Image (cartoon, rainbow, N blue to C red; front, side, top):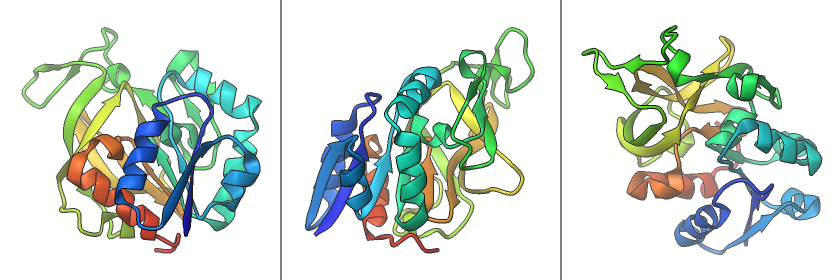
Length: 221
């Protein structure tokens, strides 16, 4: 039996993630929990999140989720989603600057500042103004052959909802990139961490395939 823990720190529609995992999994039990023992005894762990990073980090630290995640990444596969991905970085521009977990080198930037515009205007290649947040379907170009891309065509579309994006440090490795006014990291991998900015549970066939791949992944590349 594959035990999956979805980390609950009060941020995100966790049950939609859990239902998607149950749908694609075979012989899977899913726990939505903040209990350290349950998370550490799981075979696969999902670290989701939506909302403001200041509030997310406040709850992560208050509940000791930072220590739990640090222990998880030593010996089992971790999938971070949306703000969960952003929380792994060094810091975020959101809320006038927030220190994050520092497990992956990089920073989280605001789309409106991506082109250095004081007005916060973000434009495409034709000069058309783009709305922030970036919301809806967008293509992800795969930049490596990671096991979580198995059975997913390059440039498949995934569903995004975010105003901030990850800018990786030079030593880190993107697994997928997307364009929205600027190119940004849509997926990354580091050891047995795989993190995505999009929502796989809302991304239909491709997203469900990624979750299926995660359940089969042993953390190696």
